[in-house]
Image 1 (cartoon, rainbow, N blue to C red):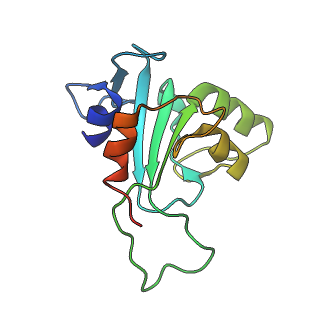
Image 2 (cartoon, rainbow, N blue to C red):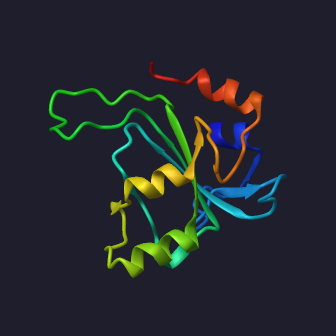
Length: 142
């Protein structure tokens, strides 16, 4: 729901629609399907279902996870970064590299960086508005 409000996504009526949560209402991706992911930590993993690919993955993450065990650590619910992946091109690049694709698909850091839309930067796949940035900032964990 939160992503739909911030990114103007029309959610599917049924929560169990295979492969996507809704469609972008307006903007450069209007009408295209989107699967929203929320990860408490940015661990460079993405849940990908090859049987039901959306047009895009919109991924909201908490802080980057240092390479150490998670025992005794908290996993706060916050948004520090947001990424927008073109699902088909990402899958093609992963398959070309021989990556196993599934619920915990390992995605290179360079892929994450080129998909980052918040905080935004040059070359982002989507420019977010000041209003979207303000809403996202309210969920920061810093």
